[in-house]
Image (tube, rainbow, N blue to C red; front, side):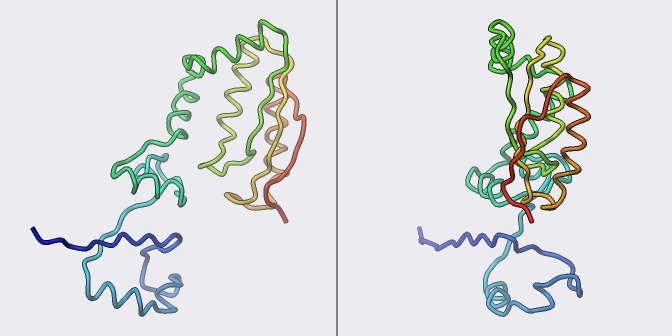
Length: 187
């Protein structure tokens, strides 16, 4: 059997698009890549949405793309699994989540949520937070606090104030409070 060499080349941020003025790669030219394409077989992979285990239409990122390439199959992201649990109001079917709520309820302690506060998608979802807040209210928890990490990477770095306004309304609906606000990237 003959040994054949194979190269897996990952070009983060490189995409196949229309050959027109909206395509920076096309307008600027790519002689090195063009030479490789002319000499060797080429294949393309989708790097977003359900093709990489994300919700339909959700933009992918290098983390998601590399995970699916390494696995050689579609790896459903936690985002999809959590979306389903939130949509179907089944968070408490997860034994760890249920135990956390029960612990807070039985001890009278405070419940704190901390995470990215945006509709960034891959690393954050306000819909998830809103469902967790609704479950806290449903479970009778009245000492619930949210610690906001403003995004600025997966969304506009100036969009934080809009997310805070939206979150404030949901906190009021569910008896929670915003306890702190910090940022990971902003202008």
